[in-house]
Length: 320
Image (cartoon, rainbow, N blue to C red; front, side, top):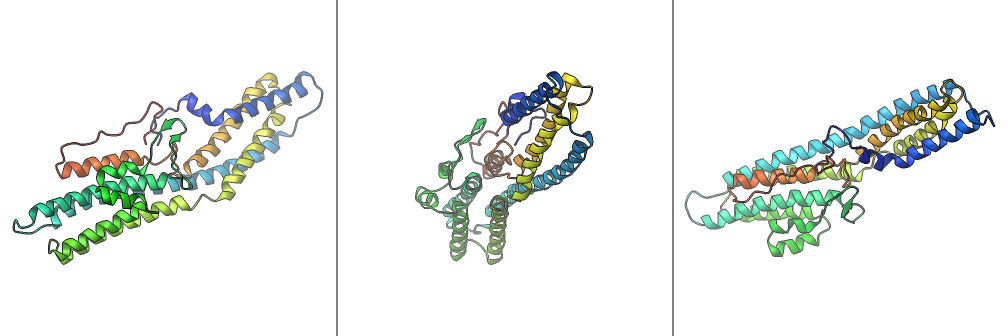
């Protein structure tokens, strides 16, 4: 997620330089042919571009609103995951146990296992969502992000990790294992029946959260909007120099037409880059930072001695 208030020029040019080069060369060609050498009349009525600009602005505004709604829903879902993770740790710590000291060592071990497995679950969900077409991106545009399931290894038993690693849906596997351990604890009389129900309800919330994330991930933004917005922006940018060349701007029509084209290009790119929040890109929901925040909170609550450092944004203002 980009958190810097000001975008660096190299970041802007990284996505726009090809289009800007086309806009500039087209404007120069129109100026030379029409105004400088006066070989051919290339002007078109200014009202034509005015009407097209108005329609395109409305179209892009609708697209961007819809794209932002997808991104914001994803962020709210991960906010729920943070909240319910804290609830899970508290319920495990308080609701599991016996009044006497019998089996206390095993009970404490189970509590730690349930908390650590949940930390593994949130990290596994992050990797699961950032996978693209079955492959994990190791190099992501302007920064490095590993995103491999091996990152979950420290939170699971070695044997359990082997089973986890070979599953088609590793996060769901971990939730099933949580349920099995709760059932075993109930059979040993470590959990009362209504406490088991409460813990199971929290696991259901984690299933719901994963399902909501998968819905956003697997349901693409309507391709009609994405495709035609690119087409309309291209047509609009191609016509702008022809509308300005007949005025009194002369050479100034080149930077002016490029600037106007850039505005609509930027609007289109904002929507395109925002519509998919789990694609391992700069505009992603900051799942790595949220996973680390969850790990810090849960480990602190169970008095683990070592806490991971908070994730900070990189030099480009990107917080993963």
